[in-house]
Length: 442
Image (cartoon, rainbow, N blue to C red):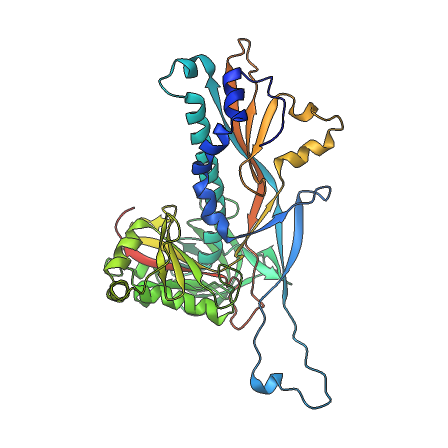
């Protein structure tokens, strides 16, 4: 608990904080922080170097064969070269607050102050989790979509989802596609170069429906697969090539998840404990979980006590080297004119798939030379060990002195480092595999 002078707060609020009740109450609201952010490698931004930084990270190492690793007598061992790839982040401030009217809280049947701060902490934790989820899913599903029209020979390709078609790697650094930096794709199996990518809603980076500009006209068919040359692997139930082809009968089976884990092991992706060969994690929603328990292989494993590891709430169990966990924040693509069924996305993941770059809120107080000025009207409490997520209680500033403000703050960015040069295969990202299956509406 932070040691601060709380005299500026109303006695009831100060008492709640000094007694530790606020901290204990908020702990249960932080569960969303333990889901998506468990995939993160945390990087603390050092300060005084600007807000945008380009960093490098060493990739995975290609194993040798017996012939290439053999050392001749009197000859030094050969040297392996570890690939180095770049990624960038730009730390941005985030936060939301709530005003708590003290007379209303006093007259309420229960402690409205604690209830409001509890709800606010859950909101912040869920919001940060979604930031991480959206970046991760965009990376590991991007660059693999399908066309939505049949216009004849054109250079403008109408796409269901342009996510992942906006940047190409140039010397390991993601760079916007252009005529000088085109992206190699196949459209219905025909090779083309993408020179521009625009979303229909003008979102940046491009997300959802949009248009790709290609280097030479092509007469493609509706629902042709459009695949980036370095697109990550996506496992679709029934071996469907696109999400459009998934139908109601393509419900989840454990075989698809084993296939995803096998891909990760092929690329030496470290498991949840950071060790190669250890268990991977897998997030599934409640509908996918329900379908898996009906799968014959999974059911037989349960009868044979092959599923184990209910180590925490939300953990379904461990099977085939995969730790299955419930996560109701998984995305579902609703059936429409282009999707024949509701497509549920699960993800099998290893360690350090995401980088969370952050600045603790307390670091900003270092620029104030006189101790106490920066916090004279605020109580700040870190809600996680790294102090990425902070709760702030501000003294009443209104004329009547009756409204206490509570806020959550975070200064961070989530980015997905590439592994395109690591191991075999051209996939840009290799530390996760998305599994797409059919299911009911979420």
